Image (cartoon, rainbow, N blue to C red):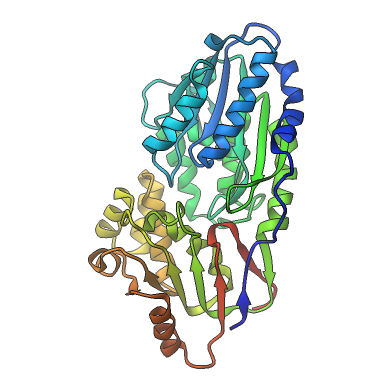
Length: 391
């Protein structure tokens, strides 16, 4: 046993409300005049955090005598989380009587072209955003398994499917991975997309795995992004000296292991500390099964990594990326899944070994790697990025 790898603990902010109020002082000067206002949030941000930020934004509007008819809150789509009825209901109650709520649809025909990035991505935005004279972004910065980081680049969540397809065609490029920014073409393209959105003010928070807010940043997106990434790196990047033959990883429990589609992000996060031909033991309940139809369909339809790569370049669909990552991962490693998911899917479709308990999985893995095998354990896979110092 080499050890247990955890994100560095940071105490939650003592007075989150006061920190948010302080951060929003600069917003009031942006709200001068009678322009339409668009507030952009992402469904990838945890609902309790979205709710708190929206409440503080609405209070700032009240202090600045902003009428509710001028304000639209656009909730952007997430690759890993559908619009759940309970989350939407929570946000609806929060904005009721304060602003209009719009759930963005990547496939909407009511989009407007706003330019092109250096990666030749044509950018189409939600019309409510384009029509606004003041654009506000609320977001949570954290590691992302292939885009590098999620935060100020969430303007991608209110674009059109054509924009999304071009950005995700970069998925097969070099430099893709968690905690990578400047060398990551997907991250760079998504930041250029945010720049085309012409955001006037960004409210950004850093939170721990439990959803407790640790720090708040505010201002222009380009001003807050380096601060937020630096803090995320300090907390969630954990250097390790040796790779393991076995890595036991949990997605972190509810809601991160609702289905296999989401839980596999934890595997992408820890791949850097696994020896070739090593074994991942993924502990994820998956009460909703595999979770994404495109993820399932692509694994049934495309039998090789080259076929998946070609399809991503040709016509990406949300969900297909996880089929690509899983297939690529299984070329070098094995996964033992501990979950409630029926073996018909886990073994027959997704090609995973399965066991009923974590102990059974560990015994199976140790028989394969031998008694000299080295083992790491990562309890919060989505919020921990182990980075090896040596091979």
